[in-house]
Image (tube, rainbow, N blue to C red; front, side, top):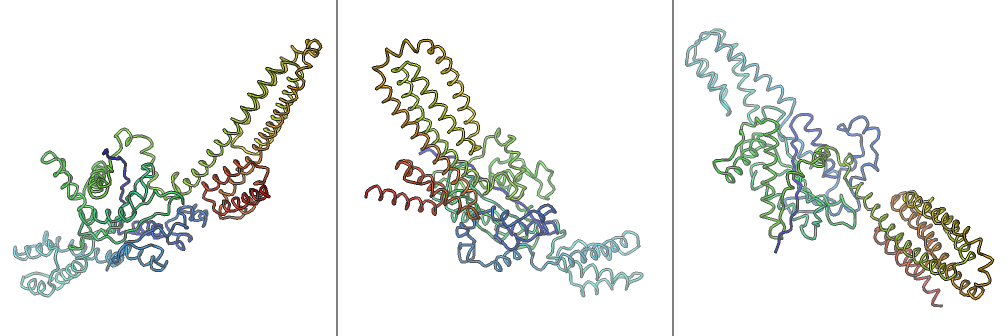
Length: 568
């Protein structure tokens, strides 16, 4: 069986120990943990314009709160709904991720300065003062040590050397050792990564829903990937978001994992270097001796850093294919290089840095797309009405062929003028059909112009043809009766449906806000016995597709009442 190809979205972001990293890391965790109270406040990470303009409605548009039960949180007891955690518990989870253990940025900075000053003085002393070789070797050994140094033992040995200003230099040595021992399990710089956020998503365009790959399977695969490649860097937090979609969809679920930047064995904040090493292992295993490896010091230029990220994606694709996709007959593959370098791809990379509410593609735009789909369905209904109008035109042509006289042409002209006036009034109420109205007006004007020219030519022969067409009067009257009924049917079918679709569209836009109920009453009022049974059923189906259960039930009840009244 042929594999089904798809793409993945795998990305990661590092958040440093410094003030900026802690602020931005807190911002992403507030969103991931759905901390609504903090989202509604004017957070420090927002710029001035956001502080002034951010509202509850703007926050709610980031996800559908009615789907929050589908969000999951990975715990030692298994994967549980995020809704089972209170806002206070979620706040504690945020602090557990953002706050590095046993670390005070103020104290770390102070001890770092003390250590640097003491090291400079000791080094300068060795360089400029005459001192025995054993004493110099002793000082250098302490300066080079990366382990805890015994203060009392070092003081004892240091006092064995003969030197000037011994008490002053002993004090410098003690200051260095105390600062060194204090910082032994602390990062050398606050620019090191405190934690890393990893995102795993199957893009909606692939059409792979949770019925094929469940959210729990995605979370389990993400966990296995991290444990396999980075076992010494604990997963601080992992969540599944399944509320950034439309209610009738089952795609768009994605996993957020937050990995500690500190090695649990060594205490060093070296996740970035560990990932470079894993990339080198991956490349050597794949390409052998011809592999181009990266410096494991962590010093990479911009292009090299981008290549490392690309190879990390390749590692993830291979792992997901082997452990999740291939057993389901799915194969994850990268886009062709031409697509990866396209302007659209560049734009997507820029948008990835924006908050979700600022991206052109988010939960809010998905709602707008759903409204557009309803408009497409409405247009299809218009097309059906247009087909009926075409049937009317065909019948009119046959009547014109049978009559071929001035009276028939005059009646036809009047009918077309009345039809034009009614269509114009209906089309003015719907701006989305403005262009269609203009085209219809132009077509009607052209047809009227043609009919008037034909009328002028026929005026000269009216008197001669009146005597010849007496026998056709009854046939003409019958056909005209058919035309009148069809014209009335088309007009009556078109106008109520246009009004109801307009009210349904307005209600969908105002769903959950004031004004929606008023539009519902308009819809129910227009849903009357004057509508044919087929059109009433069609409108109920359209309401079902919008997901408006309240309106669908109301229309269904009224349809039953109408049908019961017909049966009596």
